[in-house]
Length: 259
Picture 1 (cartoon, helix red, strand yellow):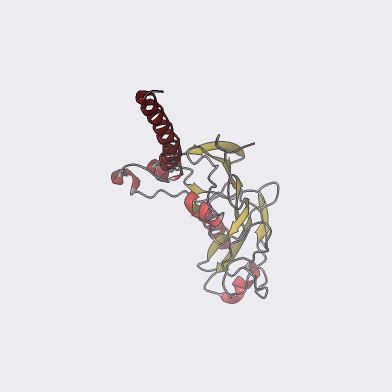
Picture 2 (cartoon, one colour; picture 1 turned 60 degrees about the horizontal axis):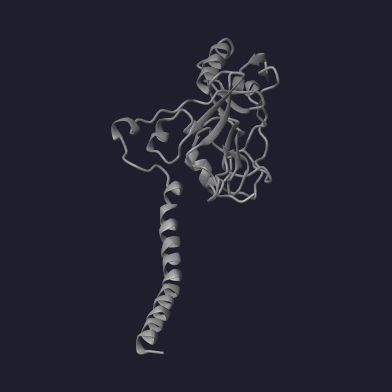
């Protein structure tokens, strides 16, 4: 064998060795680049913010629905005469969840601090509540402000300068799908936005579609379906940005989740 043959063989082996060593490097580089490229779908509100439009906060007052539990307290210039229009006070009980926020597997008390609480007025299947002296009142479809105005007008026949407060005792919404903690949530407030709801439920998993979130809502006896894109700043002006009583939020799976 001549010298040229050995040189060619040595060059061939060197080339193969270089290729073998290069393959893992390129595989690692490919994985790193692909992982960097896939972080974008997980980022909320990407892009430029149109502050002229998005700085305006538009909130919709929740509508009273069947199954709601209402806390109504009446006041007037005559405290003694007012007593008959208020439910008897019960001693406040303590909940293990001091924040007053829970999933469906926990017992939550109305978040009124250490103050006494009232049992509340349940809106029945016909949209009515039973109210002392005034008897049956139809409240379904009312906002809290509308119900307060209605009560004040009716109570004016019995009390001097009456006024009242109305609040929800069981503002609830449901988080389902690719959520860390899917559950039925109850909060001591009547206002919560989609990002606050996600924070309570542990956020969307890596397999959830943030750009196509479904919200199912009952509005005046009609079920409606809305979709929002959490990756766009425009979500802030969506009518579904603020959740309403009994909303269902569903996060779909993306294609990357294995079956």
